[in-house]
Image 1 (cartoon, rainbow, N blue to C red):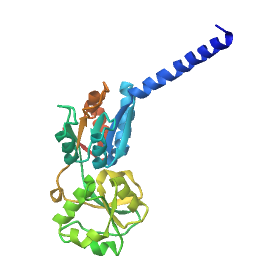
Image 2 (cartoon, rainbow, N blue to C red; image 1 turned 90 degrees about the vertical axis):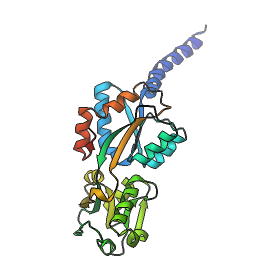
Image 3 (cartoon, rainbow, N blue to C red; image 1 turned 30 degrees about the vertical axis):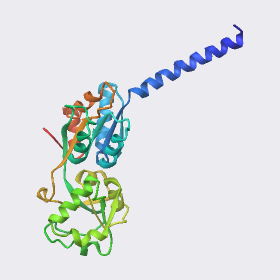
Image 4 (tube, rainbow, N blue to C red; image 1 turned 120 degrees about the horizontal axis):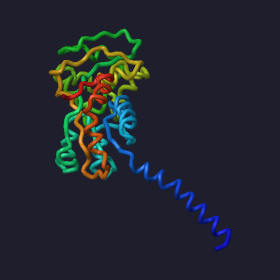
Length: 258
């Protein structure tokens, strides 16, 4: 073997030695598809889990509806956390969840928000003058046809008898954080998001919480995706209900299922 050939082989072996562990480490990452409203809390939980277990969690956040469709189309998710029961049911009916892994994890509240410097006051009650409060502005919501936060919001406004009056004033976000940002940037005078979203954004304040009897209970279920081959998927799903994770979720305004 020539010296030049030996050098090439050594370089290849050295490169392989560098790359293989990196690829293996990447392969060990746990992919979690999660509702956009979980961003801050789940990032914190993932960080704590890494320190506790050594496993790195890679969350991917968007609307539950879009994430469920991606899983249906074969996206490589290990764990799914939805912002409502319906989209978890959607996957369950298609046998795309690991049997026995599904459980309810969190609860949330629905909030009416305004920019932090807004002086607007409005009582959330039947017949409330929501259209007048908009003053020709827009009501920011996640898409009420598909995104859980938007669907809850529409049901609540229908129950309060004001949906038809404001329907044409709604600006639809592709997820709840988009709806939040419209209000935070002052592009909409009012918005409907989860209570936890409002806590996460200093540029908005809560004008009021919707009574719990105006919409279905806001429940976040979690399950392992059936196609997952990650050995730690179920362990992480279990960890989400641990005392450590519970303390983090509660810090961010969620109520944890007991």
